[in-house]
Image 1 (cartoon, rainbow, N blue to C red):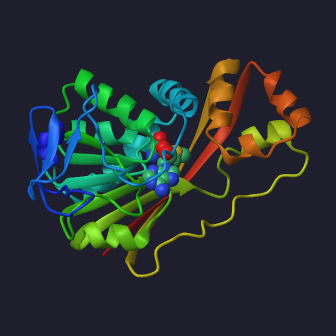
Image 2: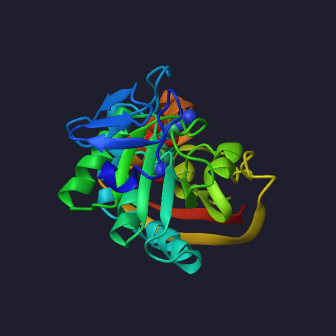
Length: 273
Ligand SMILES: C[S@@+](CC[C@H](N)C(=O)[O-])C[C@H]1O[C@@H](n2cnc3c(N)ncnc32)[C@H](O)[C@@H]1O
């Protein structure tokens, strides 16, 4: 619910604080108003071209994640957040997508603001939060590079398979706040690649790791999944960058499978500002 997090939000136009009146987010400067969408999120991507994941991409990822394939990753992320921050702390999930991880953190008592450029992602996430009566989850359409959030106002930033905007995360984090960065490890989805490609490469280290924050620890999250049925296999494939750069011939190899067993290998970096 947006009203639970107005204390950290700013107007994207004049940067004043905001309040919620009925179904509208109003800036305290008295000039700018943003209607909440039916699902409860607010679009604060002022002057930004529509972007982020498409309706289809959000639907595919929602269906895949709701089946629990990545539940061990979500549990590992929640444990890391709990290890560093008490319930009641305020988090941003930057690039939250459909809010799978965000809503799980809100269910554990964290105040969570999900930020994503995809209005389809924010709509799905806000709807799920409302269905689960998660009063402490709120969603705003915005870029992770220019978030409508006050300086030094949040205890943690969570970032799962989304762009790492170090400077902006550093701006919104309190001094001593934490950044939890979860992304692909070297062996991530090797089984998916094995099903399509002759030559296999490990994933290289991500290029956008923070340089101005202190790395406290790196946790490796590894488990195996068996994905059942073509529609789940296709959904997983569509969540990867390979979806856009695989030849039709190689895609056909995947299209013939009924089940797919693959390694899941993620790296969880924990930084302190
Ligand atoms: C791979 S998805 C991950 C979504 C979610 N964190 C998860 O793991 O389920 C990447 C997300 O980042 C969002 N995204 C990409 N660029 C962005 C930007 N500049 N600002 C905000 N969101 C962005 C996309 O819309 C998409 O929802």
